[in-house]
Image (tube, rainbow, N blue to C red; front, top):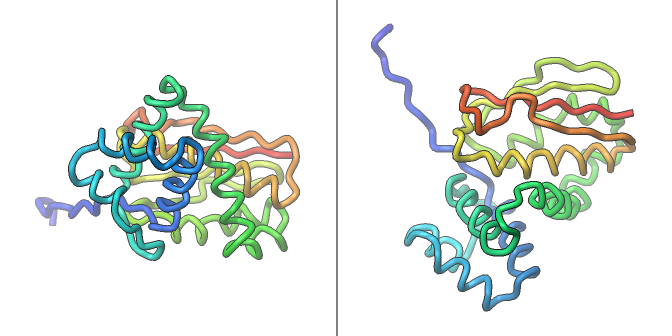
Length: 194
């Protein structure tokens, strides 16, 4: 029906990722500064980040962005590129843990063909489509992110970089050719490697 409204699913992120980011922030700045940082957030976010995070649960992507943004503002002058490096460290741990077989036995090309499986374990309400694949290059389109989720783009770049490097790729370059913050309804990520 032409007048039928589409239901918007709130974008969510897996608790294991949220927990890894929280542990990384707390480990870097200490428990006391972490608590002060969290107390600057809205009530709902504050309750989440001072409470117990279930690794198997789903949490608001907005809340995850809020704590990443607060951390960047308080500790890094708002420099977003810092988040790419931090995300690589977080995903290094996960890719050496539960997802190690995914990157260990595959070439970079194999990894790019299977990336959607890992992606689906991290996000809910976000769609990933492979736009093109060629030796040494892949293009993916994400839909469901809003411009306010742009910091997650830094984390995604960190994920792809680390996964490609762990699968044996060299000369890795990962960028959002169409960034999340542009608000076009989709974001396109281009990954290339040697």
